[in-house]
Each structure stands twice: as C-alpha cells, then as structure tokens.
Amino acid sequence: MAVGVLALQGSFNEHIAALRRLGVKGVEIRKPEQLRSVTSLIIPGGESTTMAKLAECHNLFPALRDFVKMGKPVWGTCAGLIFLADKANGQKTGGQELIGGLDCTVHRNFFGSQIQSFEAELSVPEIAAKEGGPPSFRAVFIRAPAILEVGPDVEVLADISVPSGKTIDSNSALESQEDNTGSEKKVIVAVKQGNLLGTTFHPELTADTRWHSYFLKMVSEVEEGTSSSISTSGED
Ligand code: GLN
Picture (cartoon, rainbow, N blue to C red):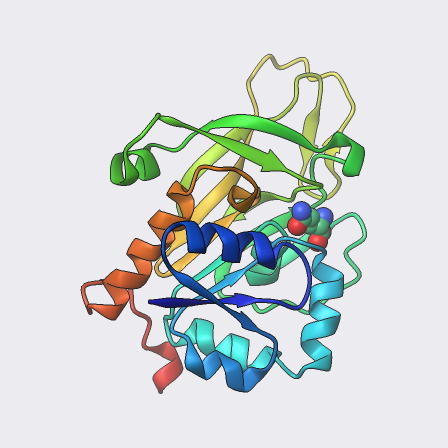
C-alpha cells in the first residue's frame, strides 16, 4: 500500500515518517498528475493560506476536488483539515480557497496565536476500540483550528473543553470574558465523514501511530471494497 502525502508545505515529512514506522510508503504529491498514482491522501498541517496559494500555482485544486468527490480516503491534519472543510472563518482568513467536501465550519487559529499552542490528552473511544492501547491520545495543538459546526453526516470523534474563563462566539471564536453560566463548553477537534478524516491537531508529531493506523484501515476498507461510504457523486 502507498499513501499520497500533499508535499507543498508543512509537516509532510513527519507524516511520511509515521507511515514508514507502519511499513507503508508515503508518496510526495506536488502535481495533479501525481494524484493518479495514489488511492488515498494525507494533507498535512502547516499554514493553510500558503498551502492554498501553492496549490493554486500548481493547478492542484480541480484534481484535489475530484479526488475527494470520488470517495478516496483523505485525512487532513490541522491546516490540512481547514483545507478540506466546506467553510473556514476566523482570524486572518482572507477568503482563501478550500478543497471542501468535509461538511463542517472550522475556525482558524481558534485557541490563539503560536504562543498559545498546547498539548492535551484526548479521549477518542472509536480509535481506542479499533486500535487498542491506552484509552487516551496525546494531541499537539499548534495554532490550531477548532470545528464549530458539523453537518448531519459528520461523526464527531473527539472534542475538547474550552479553557476556563473563555466564551465562544462563532464569529469571533474565543473571547476572554468571564462565562458566568458555569456550563462546560467544548469544541470539536476530530471528525470523520465517510472516507474523510479530519483532526485539528498533529498525530504525526507524536510517537503514537494509532491515528495513522486507523486511517490505513479506512484505506484498506475502500481498496477491498468493504467501505459502505464510497461516494459516487464524482462519477456522474
Ligand atoms: N493556523 C494554521 C492555519 O490557519 C494551521 C496551523 C497548523 O497546521 N498547525 O492555517
């Protein structure tokens, strides 16, 4: 099995290294025609505006959109998730072009600037059940987005509590106001919709390969024809 890794910018080498640890070859993708040589794709984290500009320069958008529409497995991490989302808003979103396909609204830089990057333990029952190992997952959030809205076909795999003392406004995201309601607020950080997987954090930066292994199982299911979620919308 070989998995394509969009290699325009960002942490593509780290994804390729994680795949290698699982005995799988990661193929660097920079041109539309290279997408024909792979049946699945990882879009790494990095900087989504820059990634979009580079994708535009390489004329990659039509081929990437077709790839998603054909129901091929695609996993976006952080900036890659933003790129896959149908809608992105938030700070410094200059109307950048998105691939789309994942029915959600993401908020860029939701948790603040680079200095507010953090690590957290996430409970992800779906992955732990399939992959075994400890019930929680170390997650690295680097100037991370959050998923604020999802469509009906989107399965939420993980969420995280918003830091105390902050409130969420879907237009301006995290506000430093006292929240007197006392209710715990959560935002979504990992989703699955058919053959699309999205994480707002960076599994490729940890030694735990269970997220990659989970994605490879999604790929195997499609290759073996056992996936119930292959989209036919691109084949009309
Ligand atoms: N903040 C970046 C963006 O909006 C994403 C950061 C990341 O991929 N670690 O594109």
